[in-house]
Image (cartoon, rainbow, N blue to C red; front, side):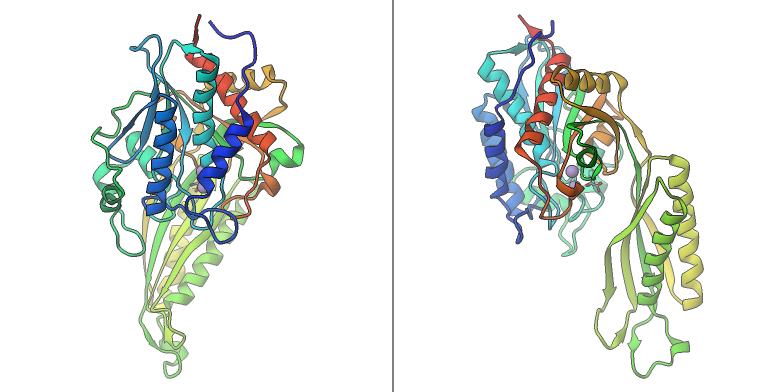
Length: 415
Ligand code: HGY
Ligand code: MN
Ligand code: MN
């Protein structure tokens, strides 16, 4: 049975929760720096667990630190309806990227508790570990392990810029759970997320019904030349890894421009060693991020970049090594779940449009193992991965209400 009336969350309580969580791991410009597996992430996880337990949820943590907070259903054997996102942030991140999805999911449960609504299927609120991939590449690594994309041992051996190991840090903050990753059942998964782009705000649309997610490669390139003196080394005798890096950045940009309109390419992470003003860089390391909603475009860009780096490095006497550290093909979300999102927006009288997600999300991996859909709300100026990231209380409430009604539809209400 589904409800005839439209359920509404408590928008003030959701806004307050977002505000309280934002106090943990504050950034330097109003956003957040709550990077995965840091003390701040641990503190945010403990607050989330406390809130879940206060809402009567049983919280379990798996061996990758993913947190599952369960509200029982009338039919304990039914696979649960899951909803959530991630609490970790970029180093100069916003307050809403991921966090809105987790706390709106908690607000859904709080609202069902207030209204005394029992559902047939259990409902599980999820916080996925390390969605951002900023500290430990790649992004979405723990939902990736959960969905069988990565091996747990490979993921736990990832190291950050200080050489700290993922597995050690997960244990250190006390969130390496007993339950083997992948054990928790997922009947369907819904993720609310800010758009992180300008479309919804520019068009004055309340809700993005996410039909697809663009595919992605993260290529880690290591360029090895030779350190030598910037003054006394003749130009013709240099093996300048820094120059190879600069040309690689240009190559990635030009390759994406050559595949417009549906392609993006960036080098956001780059290091030169030893990074001294009067030493020619002997080594450079960078992460190339390329994306497209079309698989053939994504593959063409990858091939062009790999062959292009070899071609530019060789005449400079620089060795190039390229490793694929993250990849997923373009994602088509489950039509049934997508239709539930559309129905929910319609019932609430909210304007909506179909949209392709430009960013990657845990939903992109969970979609491999369970019917999955995403809901998007606008964000100010389409800005994200920036401390100035902002949404309105109305947008947050609209998104959470669509999530609530879609989840109740899927979970079924017990009279
Ligand atoms: O990279 C992404 O798209 C996500 O924000 N981690
Ligand atoms: Mn996110
Ligand atoms: Mn993000």
